[in-house]
Image (tube, rainbow, N blue to C red; front, side, top):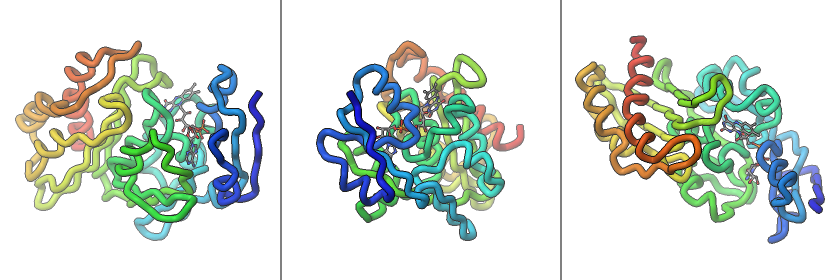
Length: 265
Ligand SMILES: Cc1cc2nc3c(=O)[nH]c(=O)nc-3n(C[C@H](O)[C@H](O)[C@H](O)COP(=O)(O)OP(=O)(O)OC[C@H]3O[C@@H](n4cnc5c(N)ncnc54)[C@H](O)[C@@H]3O)c2cc1C
């Protein structure tokens, strides 16, 4: 049997988690573990209002870890995140599923985390301290602690794009997810950040694609080259959705399509 304990603050919830407990956000993934008899003996949650806060000061946006996908969609100031939140599950899942939970949801989930990785978000932990989400994602299987909030820099207009490739639309899970932050100077790409879902054990950066884009003007010849090389160095899984070989074959084509659509072509 699993017991659910609710604490008034995140700090108290964090203190209550021992070796026999896990944290529960919206519970869209965790409750499945409960139903399957695979959840720990204690689940710890909090109704701390700070977790549901969305704060925006200029181009700096802070999302409480308990902000739901529906809350993001209801906030017109977060329009660049709407294409991401809209593609996560069904309305019921979006009403309950949180940003913090998405960061820790296993493959094939984690679409929002892919976007946060491309956007170079920073994560503040309940225990204090902040770190780039890339660092947190690398160590997420080793109980890094509770996330309190996520700082997301607002991208320049048109610089951010998101694409989820799934077999069943509109709410199938992801075969491949791609998020791209493409800034330019004088028309040439500078320091692009490409993030993949479905191309590794969790959300990962696309180093080959980023290298191929650096300093380039985006035209058809460049995108064709990118499509051929984008998946180099990645080790996608084989699962019931797709084989590793298939993912590697099509990833670059989908990235090129995303970048073309960001160009309005
Ligand atoms: C039918 C269905 C469809 C789905 N479709 C998608 C989809 O299309 N795309 C997608 O990305 N996901 C999908 N999901 C997965 C899930 O709904 C989302 O990833 C959601 O954002 C998870 O958030 P949650 O708050 O419900 O997580 P929970 O179930 O509460 O927790 C998930 C994990 O995150 C940990 N966690 C939660 N909050 C924190 C925190 N603040 N700090 C540290 N750890 C934390 C928990 O301990 C747990 O390990 C789907 C789920 C279902 C059931």
